[in-house]
Amino acid sequence: PRILDELCGILQSRGVPNHSNKLELLLERIRGNDPNLTQLDLRGMGIGQEDNDAIMDALAGNAYLRKVDLSDNMIDDDGVSALSLALADNTSITHMCLAENRITSIGAEYLLCALDTNDTIVDVDLAGNSIDAGVMDELNHALKQRRTVDGY
Image 1: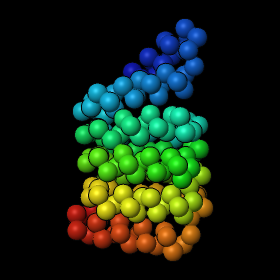
Image 2: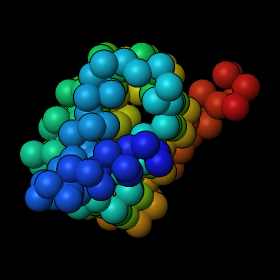
Image 3: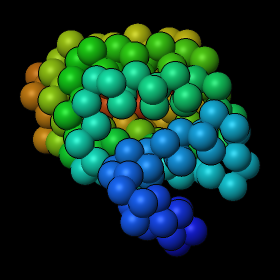
Image 4: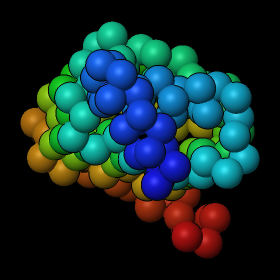
């Protein structure tokens, strides 16, 4: 993270916005399957649909990321739909934090469908979103069964 912050500082001093730099540098590492990048923290970066699509495309082919934090952004059900498609191809991510976004029960249903094809996800944090209790119970039950089987 310190090296990334330094690179972003250099680029920012040249007049390029920090958010764009940090995200683009991380996307390059994700797409490049950097084995040293096992956790992705994009909390509170104001990620909307355009950034979301680029992130999800990169996640689909990554083999090293284990934990992804996209909390406190502007990710909505369409963003979760793209994430669900990415998770169909990804076999490394085990933990997703999507707390404090704009996700409804529809988005949570997309995640439930993603669990049908992805057997590596064992934890999804959706706190602070507008999701019906019944849908959350169903998702939590499915994840709890995985944690019991996988020993998490």
